[in-house]
Amino acid sequence: MLVGFEHAAIAAKNAQKLAEWYIKTFELEVVFDDGKTPPTYLLKAPDGTILEILPATSGEPCDYDQRSAGIRHLALTVDDFEVALQRLQNSGITEFFDDRRSDNYKLIFFRDPEGNLLHLMWRPKPL
Image (cartoon, rainbow, N blue to C red; front, side, top):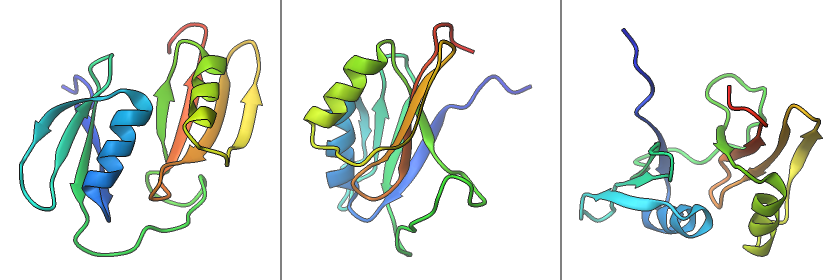
């Protein structure tokens, strides 16, 4: 029945600004732009996965932690953890937490400009 998850979506206070950050930071490709104001974007990663950035119509971003109920983070897979982490630091990200490393995985958490939790993840062999 289920083949996979087509995309994840983030409702953003400023969809254009947040999409620009994801494009610049992770070299994502815009595969859809609805041309509206405010815009909705579909951004494609090199492996083909899609992230949708759409305008929020209500609410405020919450300052949740990774154990609060609901969807908590997006895990971003990388082939070289140290290079990816250095690139994030060079792009201006300074706050990281829950840094865990072993022979089986390397991971660290950080937030995008609107406070959404992101999880940088490396494994020697994908799950």
